[in-house]
Length: 389
Image (cartoon, rainbow, N blue to C red; front, side, top):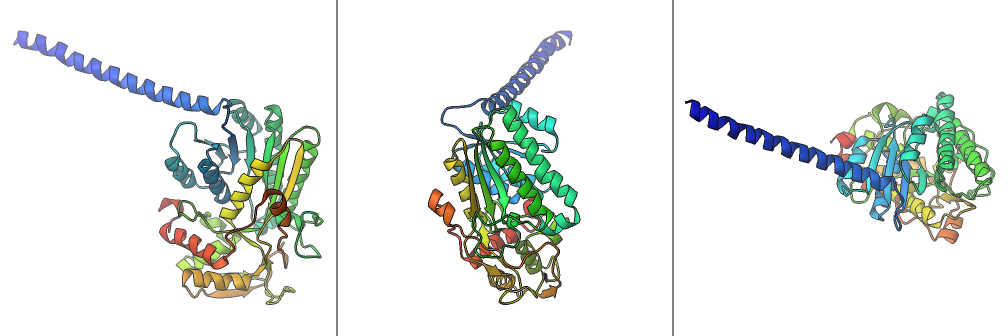
């Protein structure tokens, strides 16, 4: 018996030691892989453009990240997930799992120390700055939040870019900076006179960027875009606002919520505007076209130059027209309730996109409103709980 025991113990000990060695090797391998991956983001590589996408977990930012990854850019997403979706990031990670392609950093751009650390640890070649709260109605209720989140946070990003010699910025701006011009369509030289805190905060950020660019040789592209709709044609990404934000959100989201029965019907605010049918007129740009404009802007950015471009279709559609298109796209006879105007809204806004076509050969391709809504509706139906299923 003693002989049997004395032979079994060394045998068992050997298995334990072997298992421990294998475990250590696996941990070291994982650590080395993680270290190597981090190292790839921390150094510049010839032929590789590393883009920081702020707000990259959001609706537009995630679509932009997808397009950048498709075109072989290296992407770092920074997002505090206050408006974005981690599910969108997971979709991107699953599509592009290779080392050195995509990393996600959970951080708030309002924390200057954290932002500076991110820039110190990563070799960025360019910044696409999407991160922002972006609802007109909400901005009239919480103006200080908008000035802090948009204007102040943009200043933090610029300071980090300056400190770490990052020279290219693609800035996500808005037609809300124009306010309600006397003439349509809106061109890039239309006077900026925003009438709500969202538009004012964006214009202040633009002014800061332009003033700062005069002191160095930055390459800056400011894209003022109009009302964004649609989703990824291949069904990988979509729009999934938080339930508590639906009241302030895009009309497309409200239409889909009404079509799905999440809300009893659609509330149209304002029927007494000086337009053909009394409802607001807007220029609806598909998100696929919009992110194409961002990637082209990145390719055309030049040191010492500031490019400012409208990104729209050049055609205005009324809210009533939009609702009818949504009814056709969803196949649901959505109930509509007409209410008084929403504070901070304007009657008519649509773009003249000729400059961006002339200088970057960009024009909107997804201009069929009903088709854009049909694509987005397909994603909504297959993601009834957003990115959670």
